[in-house]
Length: 381
Image 1 (cartoon, rainbow, N blue to C red):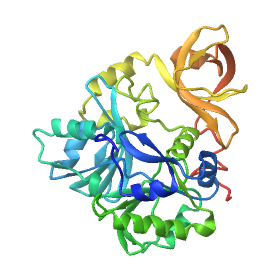
Image 2: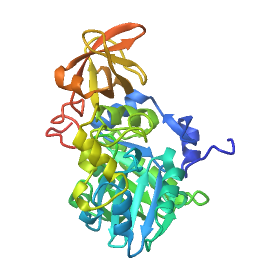
Image 3: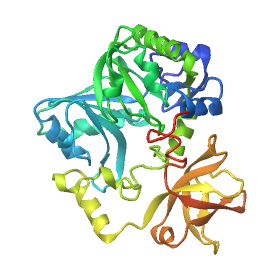
Image 4: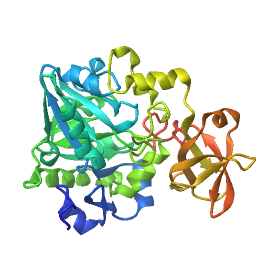
Protein backbone atom coordinates (compact mmCIF):
# COMPACT_ATOMS: atom_id res chain seq x y z
CA UNK A 1 0.00 0.00 0.00
CA UNK A 2 1.40 3.38 -0.97
CA UNK A 3 1.18 6.38 1.28
CA UNK A 4 -1.67 7.75 -0.84
CA UNK A 5 -3.67 4.50 -1.02
CA UNK A 6 -6.41 4.14 1.60
CA UNK A 7 -8.51 1.29 2.94
CA UNK A 8 -11.98 0.88 4.37
CA UNK A 9 -13.01 -0.91 7.55
CA UNK A 10 -13.59 -4.08 5.51
CA UNK A 11 -10.23 -4.22 3.76
CA UNK A 12 -9.21 -7.52 5.39
CA UNK A 13 -12.50 -9.10 4.30
CA UNK A 14 -12.08 -7.86 0.73
CA UNK A 15 -8.46 -9.02 0.58
CA UNK A 16 -9.49 -12.59 1.38
CA UNK A 17 -12.55 -12.80 -0.86
CA UNK A 18 -12.32 -10.22 -3.66
CA UNK A 19 -10.25 -9.02 -6.59
CA UNK A 20 -8.88 -5.66 -5.49
CA UNK A 21 -8.24 -2.51 -7.47
CA UNK A 22 -7.48 1.12 -6.60
CA UNK A 23 -10.42 3.50 -7.00
CA UNK A 24 -10.41 7.12 -5.86
CA UNK A 25 -7.30 6.33 -3.83
CA UNK A 26 -8.89 3.34 -2.05
CA UNK A 27 -8.11 -0.35 -2.35
CA UNK A 28 -11.53 -1.75 -3.14
CA UNK A 29 -12.98 -4.97 -4.61
CA UNK A 30 -13.74 -4.73 -8.31
CA UNK A 31 -15.51 -8.09 -8.06
CA UNK A 32 -15.78 -11.23 -5.92
CA UNK A 33 -17.17 -13.98 -8.19
CA UNK A 34 -17.64 -11.88 -11.31
CA UNK A 35 -19.29 -8.66 -12.47
CA UNK A 36 -22.15 -10.26 -14.41
CA UNK A 37 -23.05 -12.69 -11.62
CA UNK A 38 -23.04 -9.89 -9.04
CA UNK A 39 -24.99 -7.55 -11.30
CA UNK A 40 -27.75 -10.09 -11.89
CA UNK A 41 -27.89 -11.00 -8.20
CA UNK A 42 -28.87 -7.38 -7.46
CA UNK A 43 -31.43 -7.23 -10.28
CA UNK A 44 -33.02 -10.56 -9.33
CA UNK A 45 -32.47 -11.01 -5.60
CA UNK A 46 -30.02 -9.06 -3.40
CA UNK A 47 -26.41 -7.92 -3.22
CA UNK A 48 -24.29 -6.08 -0.67
CA UNK A 49 -21.64 -3.44 -1.41
CA UNK A 50 -19.04 -1.84 0.84
CA UNK A 51 -19.34 1.90 0.17
CA UNK A 52 -17.31 3.06 3.16
CA UNK A 53 -14.90 4.84 0.79
CA UNK A 54 -17.51 7.55 0.25
CA UNK A 55 -17.33 10.83 2.17
CA UNK A 56 -19.57 11.51 5.17
CA UNK A 57 -19.85 14.95 6.74
CA UNK A 58 -22.10 16.16 9.57
CA UNK A 59 -23.28 19.76 9.49
CA UNK A 60 -24.73 20.93 12.80
CA UNK A 61 -25.80 24.24 14.34
CA UNK A 62 -28.64 26.73 14.22
CA UNK A 63 -27.65 27.83 10.70
CA UNK A 64 -27.26 24.33 9.25
CA UNK A 65 -30.35 24.62 7.03
CA UNK A 66 -29.59 28.17 5.90
CA UNK A 67 -25.96 27.30 5.20
CA UNK A 68 -26.76 24.23 3.11
CA UNK A 69 -29.41 26.09 1.15
CA UNK A 70 -26.63 28.53 0.28
CA UNK A 71 -24.19 25.89 -1.01
CA UNK A 72 -26.46 23.27 -2.64
CA UNK A 73 -29.10 23.58 -5.35
CA UNK A 74 -31.94 21.58 -3.80
CA UNK A 75 -34.17 22.95 -1.04
CA UNK A 76 -33.04 21.67 2.37
CA UNK A 77 -36.02 23.43 3.98
CA UNK A 78 -38.28 20.83 2.39
CA UNK A 79 -36.52 18.01 4.27
CA UNK A 80 -38.28 16.67 7.34
CA UNK A 81 -36.27 14.82 10.02
CA UNK A 82 -35.41 11.27 8.94
CA UNK A 83 -35.70 12.06 5.25
CA UNK A 84 -33.20 12.49 2.42
CA UNK A 85 -32.82 14.16 -0.95
CA UNK A 86 -30.50 13.99 -3.93
CA UNK A 87 -28.71 17.24 -4.76
CA UNK A 88 -25.65 18.85 -6.28
CA UNK A 89 -23.50 21.81 -5.33
CA UNK A 90 -22.16 24.13 -7.98
CA UNK A 91 -19.39 26.66 -8.43
CA UNK A 92 -20.15 30.25 -9.35
CA UNK A 93 -20.32 29.30 -13.04
CA UNK A 94 -22.93 26.62 -12.40
CA UNK A 95 -20.46 23.75 -12.86
CA UNK A 96 -21.12 20.70 -10.69
CA UNK A 97 -18.64 20.37 -7.82
CA UNK A 98 -20.27 17.11 -6.77
CA UNK A 99 -23.55 15.22 -6.54
CA UNK A 100 -24.60 13.60 -3.26
CA UNK A 101 -27.42 12.69 -0.89
CA UNK A 102 -28.42 14.94 2.02
CA UNK A 103 -30.02 13.38 5.13
CA UNK A 104 -31.80 15.41 7.77
CA UNK A 105 -31.32 13.74 11.15
CA UNK A 106 -33.00 16.52 13.15
CA UNK A 107 -33.68 20.24 12.58
CA UNK A 108 -30.06 21.23 13.29
CA UNK A 109 -28.17 18.07 12.29
CA UNK A 110 -27.69 17.18 8.62
CA UNK A 111 -25.58 14.43 7.08
CA UNK A 112 -24.07 14.66 3.60
CA UNK A 113 -22.70 11.64 1.73
CA UNK A 114 -20.59 12.47 -1.31
CA UNK A 115 -18.33 10.75 -3.83
CA UNK A 116 -15.10 9.14 -2.68
CA UNK A 117 -13.08 10.98 -5.32
CA UNK A 118 -14.28 14.32 -3.93
CA UNK A 119 -13.94 13.77 -0.18
CA UNK A 120 -11.25 16.38 0.37
CA UNK A 121 -12.54 18.82 -2.26
CA UNK A 122 -16.12 18.81 -0.94
CA UNK A 123 -15.09 19.18 2.68
CA UNK A 124 -12.83 22.11 1.84
CA UNK A 125 -15.57 23.74 -0.24
CA UNK A 126 -18.00 23.54 2.68
CA UNK A 127 -15.45 24.99 5.10
CA UNK A 128 -14.55 27.79 2.68
CA UNK A 129 -18.18 28.86 2.28
CA UNK A 130 -19.21 28.54 5.94
CA UNK A 131 -18.00 32.01 6.95
CA UNK A 132 -20.86 33.98 8.47
CA UNK A 133 -22.90 30.89 9.34
CA UNK A 134 -23.22 29.41 12.83
CA UNK A 135 -22.41 25.81 11.88
CA UNK A 136 -19.95 23.07 12.69
CA UNK A 137 -18.72 20.88 9.85
CA UNK A 138 -17.25 17.54 10.88
CA UNK A 139 -15.81 14.84 8.63
CA UNK A 140 -16.93 11.50 10.14
CA UNK A 141 -15.89 9.30 7.20
CA UNK A 142 -13.20 7.35 9.06
CA UNK A 143 -15.45 6.59 12.02
CA UNK A 144 -18.56 5.37 10.19
CA UNK A 145 -18.74 2.37 7.87
CA UNK A 146 -21.37 2.25 5.14
CA UNK A 147 -22.96 -0.61 3.19
CA UNK A 148 -25.48 -0.72 0.37
CA UNK A 149 -27.90 -3.67 0.37
CA UNK A 150 -29.74 -3.58 -2.94
CA UNK A 151 -32.26 -5.67 -4.82
CA UNK A 152 -35.88 -6.87 -4.62
CA UNK A 153 -35.02 -9.09 -1.62
CA UNK A 154 -33.06 -6.39 0.27
CA UNK A 155 -35.88 -5.65 2.72
CA UNK A 156 -36.55 -9.33 3.36
CA UNK A 157 -32.85 -9.90 4.07
CA UNK A 158 -32.30 -6.96 6.40
CA UNK A 159 -35.58 -7.44 8.28
CA UNK A 160 -34.15 -10.63 9.74
CA UNK A 161 -31.60 -8.49 11.57
CA UNK A 162 -33.38 -5.17 12.15
CA UNK A 163 -35.12 -3.97 15.31
CA UNK A 164 -37.18 -1.64 13.10
CA UNK A 165 -40.01 -2.56 10.74
CA UNK A 166 -38.39 -1.77 7.40
CA UNK A 167 -41.60 -1.77 5.36
CA UNK A 168 -42.57 1.54 7.02
CA UNK A 169 -39.43 3.24 5.67
CA UNK A 170 -40.40 4.83 2.36
CA UNK A 171 -38.05 5.72 -0.46
CA UNK A 172 -35.61 8.45 0.62
CA UNK A 173 -36.72 8.02 4.23
CA UNK A 174 -34.45 7.02 7.12
CA UNK A 175 -34.50 5.52 10.62
CA UNK A 176 -32.13 4.83 13.49
CA UNK A 177 -32.13 1.13 14.30
CA UNK A 178 -30.10 -1.83 15.46
CA UNK A 179 -29.01 -4.73 13.30
CA UNK A 180 -27.32 -7.81 14.71
CA UNK A 181 -27.07 -5.81 17.95
CA UNK A 182 -25.09 -3.08 16.15
CA UNK A 183 -26.24 0.55 16.18
CA UNK A 184 -27.06 1.73 12.64
CA UNK A 185 -28.74 4.48 10.67
CA UNK A 186 -30.60 3.10 7.66
CA UNK A 187 -32.00 4.87 4.61
CA UNK A 188 -34.03 3.58 1.67
CA UNK A 189 -31.64 4.89 -0.95
CA UNK A 190 -29.10 3.45 -3.38
CA UNK A 191 -27.16 3.73 -6.62
CA UNK A 192 -28.41 0.70 -8.55
CA UNK A 193 -31.97 1.62 -9.57
CA UNK A 194 -33.24 -1.19 -7.35
CA UNK A 195 -35.12 -1.07 -4.08
CA UNK A 196 -32.77 -1.32 -1.14
CA UNK A 197 -31.07 0.36 1.75
CA UNK A 198 -27.86 2.09 2.67
CA UNK A 199 -26.70 1.19 6.17
CA UNK A 200 -24.46 3.45 8.27
CA UNK A 201 -22.55 1.65 11.01
CA UNK A 202 -21.87 4.41 13.55
CA UNK A 203 -19.32 2.82 15.88
CA UNK A 204 -16.94 1.40 13.30
CA UNK A 205 -13.71 3.33 12.95
CA UNK A 206 -10.75 2.36 10.81
CA UNK A 207 -8.83 1.42 13.94
CA UNK A 208 -11.77 -0.51 15.46
CA UNK A 209 -13.74 -1.99 12.54
CA UNK A 210 -15.30 -4.85 14.54
CA UNK A 211 -18.90 -3.70 14.24
CA UNK A 212 -18.56 -3.25 10.49
CA UNK A 213 -17.14 -6.74 10.01
CA UNK A 214 -19.77 -8.24 12.33
CA UNK A 215 -22.68 -6.67 10.50
CA UNK A 216 -21.28 -7.43 7.03
CA UNK A 217 -21.05 -11.12 7.92
CA UNK A 218 -24.50 -11.10 9.56
CA UNK A 219 -26.09 -9.63 6.43
CA UNK A 220 -24.44 -12.23 4.22
CA UNK A 221 -25.73 -14.97 6.50
CA UNK A 222 -29.24 -13.48 6.61
CA UNK A 223 -29.37 -13.34 2.82
CA UNK A 224 -27.94 -16.78 2.16
CA UNK A 225 -31.24 -18.38 1.19
CA UNK A 226 -32.16 -15.36 -0.94
CA UNK A 227 -29.02 -15.78 -3.05
CA UNK A 228 -27.18 -12.74 -1.70
CA UNK A 229 -23.81 -11.93 -3.24
CA UNK A 230 -21.08 -9.55 -2.06
CA UNK A 231 -20.59 -7.11 -4.92
CA UNK A 232 -17.70 -5.00 -6.13
CA UNK A 233 -17.25 -1.75 -7.99
CA UNK A 234 -17.67 -3.43 -11.38
CA UNK A 235 -21.28 -4.39 -10.77
CA UNK A 236 -21.94 -1.07 -9.05
CA UNK A 237 -20.96 0.71 -12.26
CA UNK A 238 -22.95 -1.47 -14.65
CA UNK A 239 -26.01 -1.29 -12.39
CA UNK A 240 -25.96 2.49 -12.06
CA UNK A 241 -25.49 2.87 -15.81
CA UNK A 242 -28.48 0.60 -16.58
CA UNK A 243 -30.46 2.83 -14.20
CA UNK A 244 -29.27 5.98 -16.01
CA UNK A 245 -27.42 7.42 -13.00
CA UNK A 246 -24.45 9.75 -13.39
CA UNK A 247 -20.90 8.98 -12.32
CA UNK A 248 -18.95 12.02 -11.17
CA UNK A 249 -15.82 12.56 -13.22
CA UNK A 250 -17.36 10.81 -16.22
CA UNK A 251 -20.87 12.13 -16.80
CA UNK A 252 -20.74 15.27 -14.66
CA UNK A 253 -17.98 17.57 -13.43
CA UNK A 254 -17.23 21.26 -12.99
CA UNK A 255 -17.49 21.83 -16.75
CA UNK A 256 -21.06 20.46 -16.71
CA UNK A 257 -24.15 22.15 -15.30
CA UNK A 258 -27.11 20.28 -13.78
CA UNK A 259 -29.32 21.65 -16.56
CA UNK A 260 -27.11 20.08 -19.24
CA UNK A 261 -26.93 16.85 -17.24
CA UNK A 262 -30.75 16.66 -17.04
CA UNK A 263 -30.63 17.11 -13.28
CA UNK A 264 -32.75 20.25 -13.26
CA UNK A 265 -35.17 18.54 -10.84
CA UNK A 266 -32.65 19.20 -8.04
CA UNK A 267 -32.28 22.90 -8.89
CA UNK A 268 -34.82 24.94 -6.89
CA UNK A 269 -34.65 28.48 -8.25
CA UNK A 270 -37.49 29.69 -6.04
CA UNK A 271 -35.84 28.87 -2.71
CA UNK A 272 -33.62 31.97 -2.65
CA UNK A 273 -29.96 32.62 -3.34
CA UNK A 274 -27.44 29.80 -3.75
CA UNK A 275 -23.98 29.50 -5.25
CA UNK A 276 -24.26 29.24 -9.03
CA UNK A 277 -27.88 30.42 -9.24
CA UNK A 278 -27.21 33.42 -11.48
CA UNK A 279 -25.22 31.37 -13.98
CA UNK A 280 -27.86 28.63 -14.06
CA UNK A 281 -30.69 31.12 -14.50
CA UNK A 282 -28.82 32.68 -17.42
CA UNK A 283 -28.34 29.27 -19.02
CA UNK A 284 -31.98 28.36 -18.45
CA UNK A 285 -33.19 31.57 -20.07
CA UNK A 286 -30.83 31.31 -23.04
CA UNK A 287 -31.35 27.58 -23.50
CA UNK A 288 -28.84 24.80 -23.10
CA UNK A 289 -26.63 23.93 -26.07
CA UNK A 290 -26.02 20.29 -25.15
CA UNK A 291 -27.87 17.60 -23.25
CA UNK A 292 -27.05 14.29 -21.57
CA UNK A 293 -28.78 11.35 -23.27
CA UNK A 294 -28.98 7.60 -22.88
CA UNK A 295 -27.91 5.43 -25.81
CA UNK A 296 -28.75 1.80 -26.52
CA UNK A 297 -26.84 0.10 -29.31
CA UNK A 298 -28.89 -1.29 -32.20
CA UNK A 299 -25.90 -3.01 -33.78
CA UNK A 300 -23.23 -4.99 -31.98
CA UNK A 301 -20.74 -2.77 -30.18
CA UNK A 302 -19.96 -1.22 -26.82
CA UNK A 303 -19.81 2.57 -26.50
CA UNK A 304 -16.85 3.65 -24.38
CA UNK A 305 -16.01 6.99 -22.75
CA UNK A 306 -14.52 9.35 -25.31
CA UNK A 307 -16.11 7.70 -28.35
CA UNK A 308 -17.67 10.22 -30.73
CA UNK A 309 -21.37 10.37 -31.60
CA UNK A 310 -22.44 11.10 -35.19
CA UNK A 311 -25.72 11.75 -36.95
CA UNK A 312 -26.94 9.98 -40.10
CA UNK A 313 -24.99 12.40 -42.27
CA UNK A 314 -21.76 11.49 -40.45
CA UNK A 315 -21.53 14.83 -38.70
CA UNK A 316 -20.09 14.71 -35.19
CA UNK A 317 -22.74 15.80 -32.69
CA UNK A 318 -21.39 14.68 -29.32
CA UNK A 319 -19.40 12.14 -27.31
CA UNK A 320 -19.82 9.23 -24.91
CA UNK A 321 -19.11 9.74 -21.19
CA UNK A 322 -20.03 6.26 -19.85
CA UNK A 323 -20.55 2.96 -21.60
CA UNK A 324 -20.66 -0.77 -20.94
CA UNK A 325 -22.17 -4.08 -21.95
CA UNK A 326 -25.48 -4.45 -20.12
CA UNK A 327 -25.60 -7.84 -18.35
CA UNK A 328 -29.39 -7.60 -18.24
CA UNK A 329 -30.13 -6.37 -21.77
CA UNK A 330 -27.25 -8.22 -23.47
CA UNK A 331 -26.23 -5.21 -25.55
CA UNK A 332 -24.07 -2.12 -25.40
CA UNK A 333 -25.46 0.88 -23.53
CA UNK A 334 -24.05 4.27 -22.67
CA UNK A 335 -24.68 7.89 -21.99
CA UNK A 336 -23.15 11.03 -23.34
CA UNK A 337 -23.75 14.57 -24.49
CA UNK A 338 -25.11 15.69 -27.84
CA UNK A 339 -26.05 19.06 -29.25
CA UNK A 340 -29.57 19.89 -28.10
CA UNK A 341 -30.86 20.50 -31.62
CA UNK A 342 -29.85 16.94 -32.57
CA UNK A 343 -31.76 15.50 -29.63
CA UNK A 344 -34.89 17.15 -31.01
CA UNK A 345 -34.38 15.90 -34.57
CA UNK A 346 -34.11 12.13 -34.34
CA UNK A 347 -33.60 9.11 -32.11
CA UNK A 348 -31.14 7.16 -34.28
CA UNK A 349 -27.45 7.99 -33.99
CA UNK A 350 -24.06 6.38 -34.71
CA UNK A 351 -21.12 5.68 -32.43
CA UNK A 352 -17.64 5.59 -33.92
CA UNK A 353 -16.06 2.33 -32.74
CA UNK A 354 -12.71 1.28 -34.25
CA UNK A 355 -13.20 3.70 -37.16
CA UNK A 356 -16.63 2.26 -37.98
CA UNK A 357 -19.99 3.94 -37.41
CA UNK A 358 -22.18 1.57 -35.35
CA UNK A 359 -25.89 2.28 -35.07
CA UNK A 360 -27.54 3.13 -31.77
CA UNK A 361 -30.62 4.95 -30.60
CA UNK A 362 -31.39 7.56 -27.99
CA UNK A 363 -33.54 6.11 -25.20
CA UNK A 364 -34.95 7.25 -21.89
CA UNK A 365 -33.65 5.95 -18.57
CA UNK A 366 -33.69 3.54 -16.95
CA UNK A 367 -32.61 1.34 -19.84
CA UNK A 368 -34.58 -1.65 -18.50
CA UNK A 369 -38.36 -2.09 -18.29
CA UNK A 370 -39.25 -0.32 -15.02
CA UNK A 371 -42.34 -2.52 -14.57
CA UNK A 372 -40.14 -5.61 -14.40
CA UNK A 373 -36.92 -4.33 -12.78
CA UNK A 374 -35.95 -1.55 -10.39
CA UNK A 375 -37.64 -0.03 -7.38
CA UNK A 376 -40.83 0.71 -9.35
CA UNK A 377 -41.25 -2.90 -10.49
CA UNK A 378 -44.74 -4.31 -10.58
CA UNK A 379 -43.70 -7.94 -10.74
CA UNK A 380 -41.76 -10.11 -8.32
CA UNK A 381 -38.77 -12.24 -9.25
